[in-house]
Structures are given as structure tokens and as C-alpha cells.
Image (cartoon, rainbow, N blue to C red; front, side, top):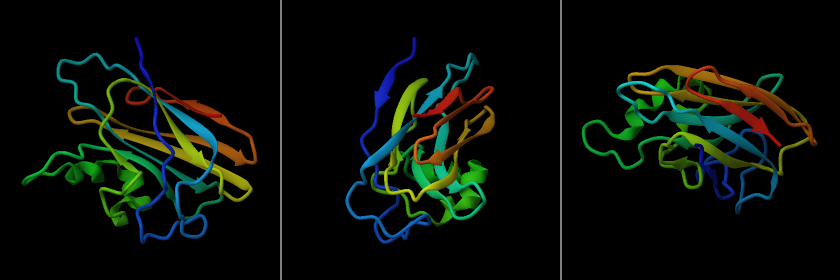
Length: 170
């Protein structure tokens, strides 16, 4: 049985951080579309919820715009939850390492298996983009799923094999 959660509209980056696909954002942007992320139930003896990051980048290459980062935001001490974000290798290299965390409206706790919906902002200029969603799990695997889409109004879908299920843009 999967659960469906709708997450609130998200400002894309922390205050004081310039966006990479446009000007600095003010209040939460209007939503043009949404992305649905499925985290599958993995049948293993020792299950840990995955760290998951999602971002948009121009299809021709360029700077990324982080939409969400789900990690152990409450973990403190010698090994805080942010320590393991580098395991989201592609996101980390694309801009995660420079993002001051926790980022208001971007950071969130890890998610249990289920289906979750996150908004895509309406202020993306017309063009071709790629949504990338990456997941990494302790004692588990790592997976990156890319979904090409265009603005205005052409969604897409792709599926992962183990750590991520179907990723759909509507």
C-alpha cells in the first residue's frame, strides 16, 4: 500500500542564494506543474530511508536549481545528517555542496516508501529542461533518474530500478 502526500509549494533556494535559472526568488512562486516521486518498498533485512534530492537544469547543460532535499534533518552530533549528503553524488557536484542547509522550503526529512508530490515553479523561462532525482540509501544502493520536459506544458515520466520508482511531471 502506498501513501500519497502533497508537499507545500517550495521556494527553490535559501535566502541570499541566487537561483541559477533566473533572478533571486521572493515569496513562494506560483506552480506551473508538479512532479510525483515514488519511493518503493525495498525488501531487505536492514532498511534505511533514502536521502533524496531533486533539481532542474537546462537540457543543453547549465546551472541547477534545487527543488527539494530529503535527509535526516534532525540528526546532530559528530555525524549530522548533512554528513551523508555527499552520497547524492550528482546533486552534490551540481550545486548541493554550496547550498546552505537546512534551506527553508527545500530541506525536509527522509520519506517512508510512498508517493509524494512536489511543485515545479511557474517562473521557469520557456525551453527544454531535465528534472533529475537522485536517491542514496545507507547499506543500500544509489540511483539517478532523469526526466526531460519542456516549458510550456510538456511533461514526462521515467522509472528507477531499485531505489526510486516512477517519477512523473504533470
